Length: 206
Image 1 (cartoon, rainbow, N blue to C red):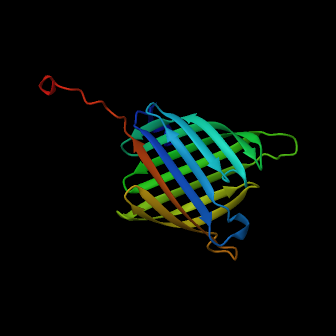
Image 2 (image 1 turned 180 degrees about the vertical axis):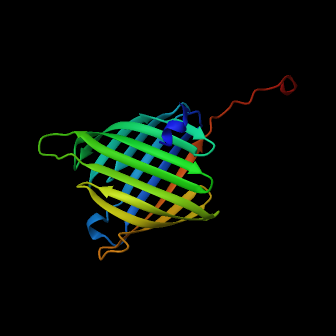
Image 3 (image 1 turned 30 degrees about the horizontal axis):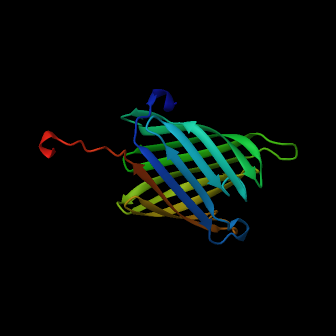
């Protein structure tokens, strides 16, 4: 309902390179590090590489295109539909969607991956990660998260993140009200890649 009131437009931004690295602290079955790296072009092109993200010992590569939408009452949002391949522990093809939004001091993001084509013997799977964060101070953010794992397993969580310049260092407590509580910590950053401009000599330099 809200999305229909937004004005969609082609993204016009600087090139950027991003990195996310996560690891579980107290869940031995999923203690392997999870890595996601992405690259954005000035005209909205998007490339993303993942390892241990879709499945253990599995590498993934996706490409997509980013669109933006803005409205005064509903903030600024970007939508990136993706298509990609996975290989390694699991070999498959999938579709995805990345959504990011800001409204004042509130940030929201959601990542969704769904396997749509796979070899015989490999079952389809869905994975999603959604979080909503509130900036308490300039260096402190708190929020809630919801993770969907393959097999339609859902895990709610609480987040506390420290912000140091462009670095984001989040800590999560998942399933906080169950006996199977587990912790996750990570680090992320996005770098703006500004184009180099050549300095032209003036007539006085000759």
